[in-house]
Length: 316
Image 1 (cartoon, rainbow, N blue to C red):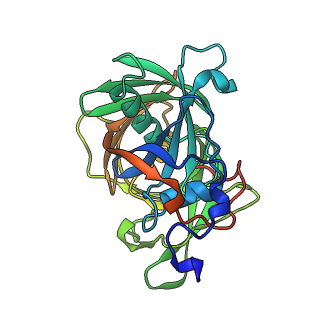
Image 2 (image 1 turned 30 degrees about the vertical axis):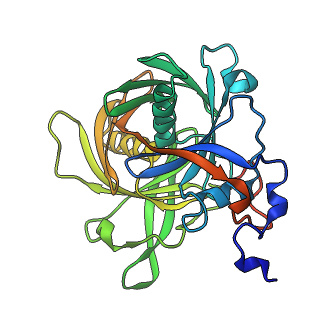
């Protein structure tokens, strides 16, 4: 029998230790979508290959990443805080992530709708520390560490009609995870970018990879300082419809380019609109976030590859 053509038989060794079924939910923030797996006793081991199989859009549930919901007390970033839950985020390729802004907003929506936190404002633990979430109607706000603009670098990206692509100058921004924000010159439009392959970056500057944001000016939105449009290639995932921490990075780069250190921005991504407020204390990211489905995953039906990326690798 050729097991490669039989659902559930390829890669069964990768399923060792997993229960036969897993409860899950599916959510998204401006099209950045995630599989949410509650693990209230912190007992699940999710190897990278299993995460990748869950995120497979043909043979799994499909997603840009997995959000595992575990008690915060078992994780050092939550030490001494009031956070009850820890966001264990993995990219679609199974690599461990330091931070995901949209993921944090979806995580907060799930906690609130599942009755795992009190309504209103509440803390959540992440690998970059504790963030504060606020659920209000259809929108969720998370207050994160302020992005840090730390230098410049370049990215070579695929471009329609250019065999070797185009090299773009960018601003290095640390949002807990690394970003390179590349404003497009006037002769380039976001629609002309080819993001089917990762942009080439300086591995000396980004030894663990980087999320690369490409931005162009928006037409202007009343009552905000900056309006930008953005496409993004997320390490460990590929092009996504949105990136929350990328929106924060793009806002920080735009505010810095204007010679300021605080300000507000609207960031339009293919999946919708995000709002960013940069203050002396931190960074607020606001936008829609929804849980759209809940169900049961039959783990033996996953197609698990023989190997996957090492834990602790790239982050989204």
